Image (cartoon, rainbow, N blue to C red; front, side):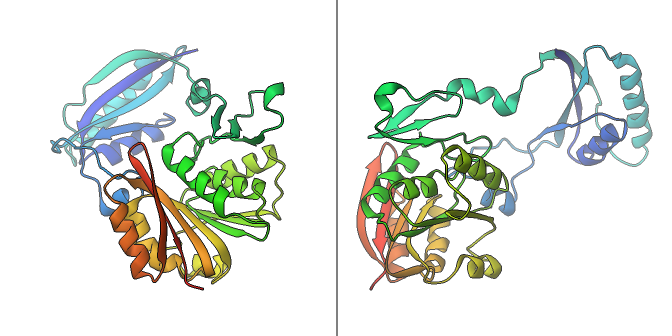
Length: 318
């Protein structure tokens, strides 16, 4: 099925009210493109170490919407133009020119699957649910992962650095906390390495569904792995729910600039002698994390590198 695609040129001043108008007319979903600078809150929620260079905001915005191929666009575009002209009386709506094109109907949520295939992390086979484990791999440690819209396939260097550290330190008595759990891969692998219990936290609500689906695929029950949404750095309720001095290992595969404020909080959730595994650290920021670890009273045990990324592993005093 094809869709008719329309790209409306307007202003940043009017983008919200024009979007609302389009939806009031029955248009389902509007994409907004502009050059408005990111807010501090936007930056906190972006999982990148280096922000892209943004062009200067020129006040222009583009709103893209779609109509089904069999739907006559003339009637809808007539309504849109009428509403825009009425809006000119109280808001600068700009040029209001509309470009038209056609696009294929693509399942964007699932389309990425064609690029994700089984692979190895050392002797661990990571495999999506739509592929079969081959006979030669049946003796290996296998983890089934469908990340969906949550981070964590295991392909990224930062995840692999964490996995290798977990393999070293997990024991049969380990209770682990994974901060920023995403797809749940670290908590589930810890259980497969022999850990007793896993807890995961994340800011992204998609992480709960992704982790629960992956738990089912791996035969992991909800009494082995608990997932919760919230910011452990500054939300007391989340800190209390997670529990103090409760974990043998805390893993955090996030970013150096998040690990710095996270570390003095996390030290209170580790048991005495507990292990703190951090990754997501772009090369050159290892010292930032190492200094945060030392300032929290922990001992740096290991620093490892893979590609452009690093991990820092530390221990809380006994």
